[in-house]
Amino acid sequence: MHKSNFVIFLAELAGTFGLVVAATGSIVYDGMMGNTLGIGFISVIHFIGLEATHILLQNISAQNKF
Image (cartoon, rainbow, N blue to C red; front, side, top):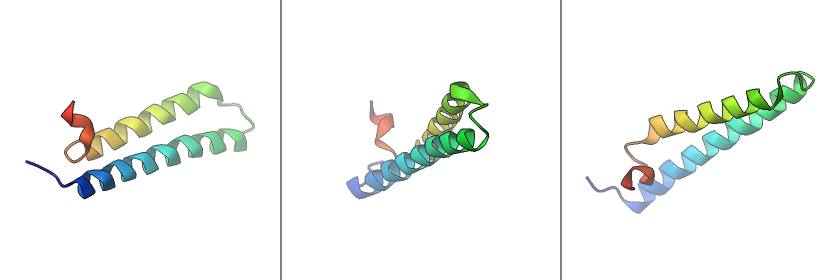
């Protein structure tokens, strides 16, 4: 099944937005907690955001074409 470039663009845009929100949110949350959670927390949340966007958009996104 072929997807139009616009649909693929929207999927990539949504995925990037979700990843940026997850990463930035984890950094802000760690700062609010007084930097007690550390870089490990930030990296785990970043990974969870990456995998969540991949799973949600895997049928639309261009990342499955490779």
